Length: 104
Image (cartoon, rainbow, N blue to C red):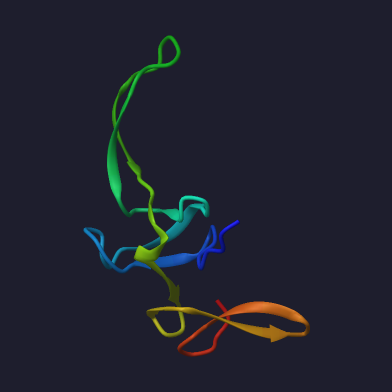
């Protein structure tokens, strides 16, 4: 199992590529492929067929997977993209901002 620096539900900023600067929530994480799906980033067009009678097919726009190395966690207190640091509090390991030290 591969460890990832982002989890589902984290707010991230895209740091490279066509969608550089886009801020969004992580919808899905795939550790084996080292990819994430970010809401509002890497929009791709998908051609769908009608699967049931009465359903319409067509071209829809959905978020595509992108490599996790292209995103960084967003810290609300710094208002910047940051790395993840860890701190042990009351015997529990928590994720904190590497720049300001606030909990993510």
